[in-house]
Each structure stands twice: as C-alpha cells, then as structure tokens.
Figure 1 (cartoon, rainbow, N blue to C red):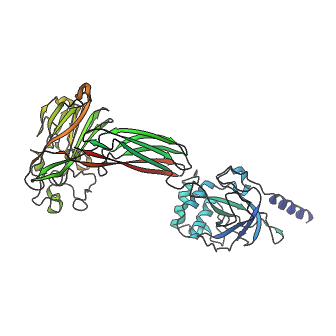
Figure 2: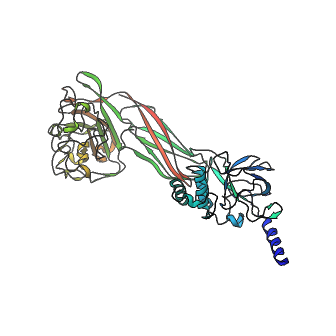
Length: 538
C-alpha cells in the first residue's frame, strides 16, 4: 500500500511539471509561464459555445489578454470544475513537440478548420469537435458523439475538416489554443480526470480580400479601331502566399465571354509583393446605323482581336492572326425561328430558318496600318452544305448547314485573296456544330427558359446573330494590321420594319473593361476585380 501511494505521488509530480511552448513558433505569441484560468459555467457559454473561459493574470504583449474567450471541451467524459486555477496555454499551429503529450496526437489543422467553418448549433459543433479530435467516448453521458451519428451538420463539419488536413488560419480567423489541465490539484487531490479545454483566439491581421487588382488605360480616349494599352497590378495584401494567380479580362463585353483573354497566369506572390502586366488591345466598337429612317440606331458590336492561337471549328489558327467578330443587335435580327419567333421575342410576323439562308450576309473590309484596304468580301451567314474549305482547312457541317465564308452561299470576294481567309463562321453555324444541336433544330430554335432570356434548353444556344472572320497576319504586308470596317449588313427579313440592308458606322461610346484576378492559398481561393474605361470616338 505504501508503495502504491509513492507511485501516485510520483505521477502527480511528473504531470504537474507541465511543458512550456517557445513563443513565436506558431501563429500566436503566447506566454510560456502559467496564467489564470476560470472555466464555466458548464454548458453556459454566452458566445455560441459549450462554455466561457476567462483568462486572468496574463502578462501584457501577448496574443491573449485578460478576457473571456469562446471555449470548447476537448474531452467528452469529464465536466469542467468551474473554478479558478493556474495552468499553461498552447499554440495549436506551433510545433507538435511543444504540446503536452495528450495533445500531440490531435489533428490540429482539422480542428482549426472546423472552428473556422462551424455550422449548426453548439451541441453539433461540440460533437463534431470531439469526433475530429478523436476523443469522443460512445459511453459518455455528456452529449456523446454517437448521439449525432446521423446528424447532417455534424457529418458535414467532420467531412470538411477531414478534407483539410493542412489548413492554417489566416488574418480574421481564429486559432485553437488548447488548455492542459490534467494534473491540476482539484480539492487537494491529484486529478488526471479534469476536463481539458480549448479556446478560440482571433488571429490578428488583414481580412479579405487578401489580394487587390488595379487597372488603368492609356490613352483614355481613342478613335474607333485604334489600340489601347491596359496596365494591371496585382498585390498580395494578406498574410499568406498566393499561388496560381491568373488575370483575365472581359475585353469590355461583359455579356459575351468568348472574347475574354488571359493577361497573365501562373503568378506567385508572397505577402506584400506586387507584379504588373500590360496588354495592348482594340476596344470593342459600338456600331450604329439608320434603321427604318431612325438614325444612330444601335446595330451591333465589332470585336477585333489579335488571335492568341486557337482551334476554331476544327481549324488551327496561328497566333498573330486577326480575328473580327460582329455581333448584331437582337433588335434587328437573331437566331430565333419557328416556335421560338413570336411576338414575345420580337417577331410578330414570325421568322423561319429558311429566312436566314439565301440572302443574309455581312460586308467586311480589312485595312493595313498604312490605311490600304487589303481584303474585302461579303460573308455568308448560313447555307446548305456538308463541308466547306477555307484558307486554313476544311470545316465539316454534320447538320447539313454551315457558314460558307466569302466563296459560297451569299458570300463573295470583292478584294484580295480568299486564301488569306483562314476560316469564317457565324453564330448560327457554330450553334449547329455543337453536339446537342446537330440534329432537330432546322425548323425550330431551342426553347428559352422565358422569352428573350437567352438561356436555351438544352443549354448553349447563342441567340445573337453574328459573324466571325479570321485572316492571316501576312494579309497586311510589312505595315501590319490597321483596322476592320463593317460596311454593310443584310437581313431578310429584318426583325422590324423594311430596312434589309444597313450600313453600320462607329458611334461614340464608353467601353469599360473589367479584369479579374484569382489565386489559391493554403486557406482557399482569393480573387479581386478592377475596371478601366476608355471613350471611343468616331
């Protein structure tokens, strides 16, 4: 019996020799000496947790102060004593070797993830915490974790925590600070069955966004068809390294994503670092015309880009080629026909698929930098054909209809060589190349979720009537590319009135380009956007 008592005393002495944590090895600066702790009341947390925990006798200059913190139970088989005592606190983001042995087996990154992504009520969070820590006791009478084995919130929190085994809190989030109380002399006896607890300590530092993007334009006023240089600066304003940063620009056409371009990608920025990039582009041109005797009617948007290199309708387009896209106003014509063309969609007299064949075309001119017209043609909208050969190769049309460029259907070469036209297309032709529209859409266009919603079923149909022409860079000779002009547009019939042929010209407009930067951190994704405006004159 005496030997047994001696053993107990030795155990108490060892347990009371609590380890200390070297400051500044984790995200927090915690005192290495013991501080005052007051727990409770049990199950009476006033801040959405199991209990409040108040710290006292805390020296100044540390990440914790004399204050009350959100508290959680680390064990589910003992109640807190609801009294005052001195003990140590530890940083769960520091080296594991600095933690008491009891805590060295806890997956702290998962615990920190859970505490920063709580859902449900207090009991559900506490149960999920026990499960993640591996301390739940199925026989415990105190909110045993198995009581919530079928609880969706508990399961969601546990699964999310387990999916983030390397999580590290950042500015504006909280850090789990374990309090080690085993060995505390409760009521004059050595107790190894006293509730260990955790408090949440807010991590100082900047909050989201952790990244900022700025954008400027030069010049801020440009003649239609003239280039503008945009400058982008991305800065890491947070406390974590940001990887895989990509900057994407919408080219000033927010409702049309096909002309979006990547300014830069694969960027890594450490906290406080910045990088700047530039892109010289041609702002989209607002085109107006006299329609039904009404001048300055919006006719459409002309988009001109130096192609970065792509595959368009199966044809490989080399980088540096010139790509012209004209998207006509839906108030003049569109890709709605059959049951899709009703008074509600702007076709009171109806519109047939056959109306789009046999006459519709766009008259487009290409100029070099010296102002010389080097290529001019009428471009076919859509005609019956199984395939068509362009300067860049052959496009197959499985629906039996497609755009025939400047050499077929309603197309006609006027100036220059058709061999310089790598490929030409139209939005209707491109629609019918999509697998979901290859068959069954030569009479009726796909239904929309509501009239003019532009959301089709099946998804993917472009209701805007438009043309795409891509020409070789060599077309423009030694002076290089100059500009593109849409000299005529034929719709038969037009959506309203009797004006079949219009002559669009640039009209004054303010173009706002919006860029978005996205990146990844150890704490998830970050993003930031910025815009710049240019006044485009005639």
